[in-house]
Length: 329
Ligand code: ZN
Image (cartoon, rainbow, N blue to C red; front, side):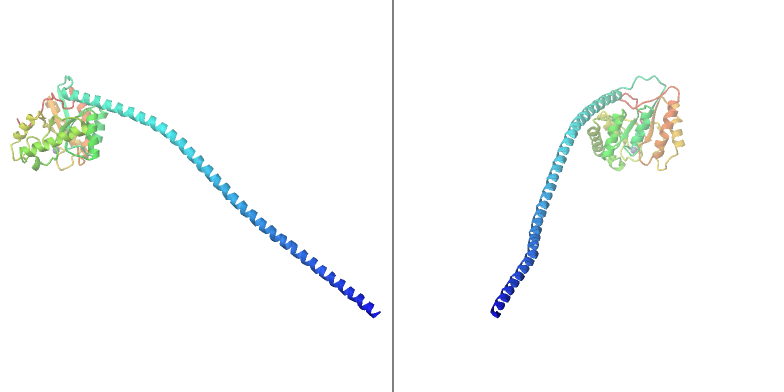
């Protein structure tokens, strides 16, 4: 009996043990399987995330490429438009340049025609406005004033080689005024030192003006005038040299007085320029185109208006047949 009991209890214990093992196993499985599944899922999610990331970056790259291509196409389109415009603009510029060149040439032809012969003017008094020492910062203003009254004048210029001076020289010619020479250096001590020095300075200016404007000037004004007391040599030596060159020199019979050190008032300049005009058939008025001579520019419109208001009086540019006013000879 006790053996039976023992066997029964042993079998029970075994069952309990198995049951326990089963429960533990079930428990372990219940814990482990979700854990493992979780890990697997995590790994897979992770992998998918990475795939997603790489896909996203690929999409971004692709969209970048598309955008760049779009920009390139826009640039190309823009360039095509610009080139089209550029072509038409340069065509227009070319035509404009041709037109301007033609105008300049015809202007020059007109200028040369004007310089060769004075227009037939029947007037008791001929007035020639002459500006020495330019170009200067005021040349453009003087040209504008002359233009506004439709008047031509004469500029006796010196050898200034800045870009603005070159432009001013070209403007003087293009706007129909007469270009005269006033020595390259304007240094009395150098140009009047010897006939060689004078001729060298003369040729330098004449060549320079021809190079810049295409005009070979045929008129000259001596620095200080032909009656200057600075030259140690007889001024006739230099006057003869000019004659040999086929160049005529012009002095003046009316001085504005603006050549001195003091800046004259507008009233004084107007009075100096206009008071004696009625005395002469030909008045050559000396003025200065100089940065230091502001009042000359201010007085110019009044001088012109006063002269234009005079009876039987005209204002002209010096031409090849203009009777020169000379202090010597
Ligand atoms: Zn001078």
